[in-house]
Length: 71
Image (cartoon, rainbow, N blue to C red):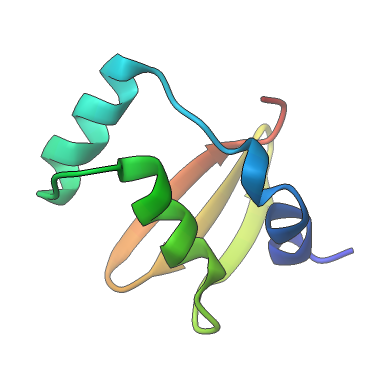
C-alpha cells in the first residue's frame, strides 16, 4: 500500500498536542484548527507522501507536513 493511501485511510487519527498546534500555527503562519488544515493539505490530489523511518513526509504547496507513523 502506498504511503499516501495509508495516511488517507487513517486521516481521522491525525492529532497533535496544544504545544504542537502552536508550533505548526507559527511555522505555517496560520490560525484556526491546524490539524484540519494539515488534513486538508494531505487529502489534496497534488500532495506527495513518503515514509522515511518513523515519519511520513507530505510535500504540498511549498511546505512539508511531518506525521509520526506510530501515533
